[in-house]
Amino acid sequence: MAAITLTRPDGLNAIDLETADALAAAFRTVSADETLRCVILRSGEPRAFSVGADLREFAEKRATPDEARRYEARASGMFDALRACPHPVVAQIEGYCLGSGLGLALLCDLRIGTRSSRLGMGASRTAHLIPAPYLRIVLEIVGLATAMELVLEGRAYDGRESFEKGLLTRVVPASELNAEVSATVARIVEGPPRAVRWHKAALTALAAPGIRMLDEDEPFRAVGSHDYQEGIRAFLEKREPVFSGQ
Image (cartoon, rainbow, N blue to C red):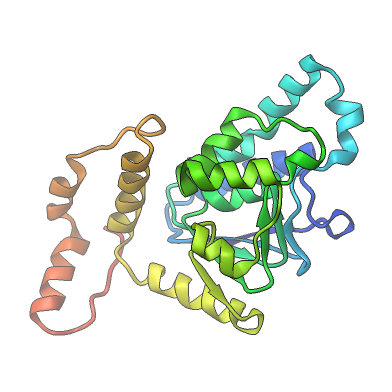
């Protein structure tokens, strides 16, 4: 297991270009580590997972149409790297999760928050037009009706409503968040790594066919793997399987 932690407490984990680059590099690093079985994306600031793009640098680095295009091309690298991660990614969401911070969370495979989490887009309050790749992320997860509500109203949902809308996978009391994330990761890590990675890739491809190609022959090749044989033997022998990733 690996953890990637957002730590910019002076701006409630607002994401500037330097942070976006660091996140992209971090996800490329964990993606290349074939020994990993799960990744946690979390905040080092309990008040916010992330409040989204750091508007403080917009006047300097995103002040013209050409600058805006260059800015978004660079910032989107963190989304591309997260989307390409083959390992399951669990978002641990405390406090505010807004704008591009919400985009990051929605690209995670599981999102666990608290009753006091606050999730939303918020761009309507700054006249900032959300680029299409960000909107596509929201649309893929919550559908058109909720995406419209998020973007047009600009309000933030609490944990309960975020769960009901599909923004959160699970909601727990704040005091139980760490334990719930740890238990979730443990369940993932106990699974057969090859099967876990393929199921993640398959579900992603089936949900958004234009994003990834699905290798439909992989389940049949996997029958010859050690973990497949171990899983069947363990079932027949009525014992817990021991998966090696082979």
